[in-house]
Image (tube, rainbow, N blue to C red; front, side, top):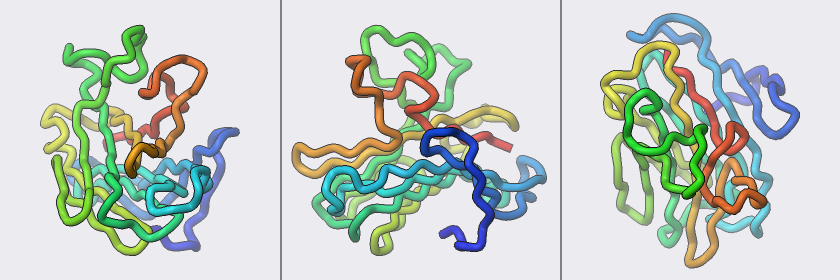
Length: 190
């Protein structure tokens, strides 16, 4: 989805990157599209449920949050591929991802799932070879999102009892769900 000639500059000492990927001139405003990317490096065996990279950005031309999941092998019909969104930080809808969550409750507001020939959730999902692309309109996520709001994104795959999460969640805190900024990608609506 992203051309190789795109300049990429590291913004975090870990695996998070920011890339300029084109011009943005949609209803949400004008400017340069910025993407956040994380590399998971095929850490669970290199199969169709192993995530290599995830890139997330807001496309102002279509007013959509776009998430691209690149796998270590071609996708298959047996694996579930999921993207989670936490976008309602100002509404009392339960715990938010980056707030204290001592009970390790689920923090996602919306989820998109692709498994086999079935898609669930909002938006559109496309699988081509080893790349899944998820598109969801900002208004579909939350009609009250405004320029400057942040949508937190994380992904996982599941094949039988094996799950791969990107970004990885901290193993030492006892919670398999994201709780800190390094466990999510941040997409700024603009």
